[in-house]
Image (tube, rainbow, N blue to C red; front, side, top):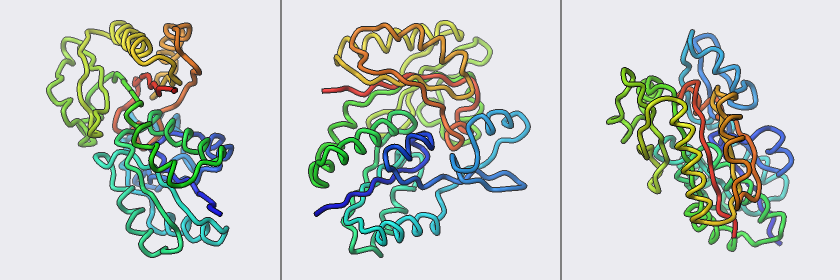
Length: 282
């Protein structure tokens, strides 16, 4: 009899309520200020970080090895036989690889570490879908087979107010060519199939950025059919609410929810980030 545990890192931007309701184990990134270190989600909220960004940009670090080891030890004690870990894109963090190495010392746990090659709501949606598959009684092998397919059906786009934070965090990647602070150019960014940031489009001004996200959402829904949709806010709740109102009545939206971009990601995107995530439903 398989007893399957589900683990994710805080790059998935799931709330404490979502984690608890779906029996998901969290390994939190560390948010590091000069005076103190915090466990992402568990000890610090997105709003806490955004409110302090102007005075200080914290650094982020992998989840503690001791913390991850503690999770694995507890799962074994609780009788779990299998572990599925869904990590943030390996291009942004080595969390998945660290967890995989720790699992080598736990031969009694049959494991699968899945590189989501994405982050935030797209990653979180994959985690929630996996939790549902576990509840529905799918086997470990069936779930491992389905996850790569589900990832190809995940689509996410966001716009940021400034490139400053991506540059400081060293995460700018293929977005580097998007230079437009003087012209008020706003990049529409997506995470490619390889799991890196790339520029999808460039528009002028915040209003046009929201309009383009609305257009992208409509195109994706018309192309793929029924989707679960998530509107993302990174210190931009008012903008996210506007985007929600702009798309909420579109055909093919099976469900729609909000998600806050969490601290570990927010320090790299900065305040004023808004986006939309679509997960195909078949």
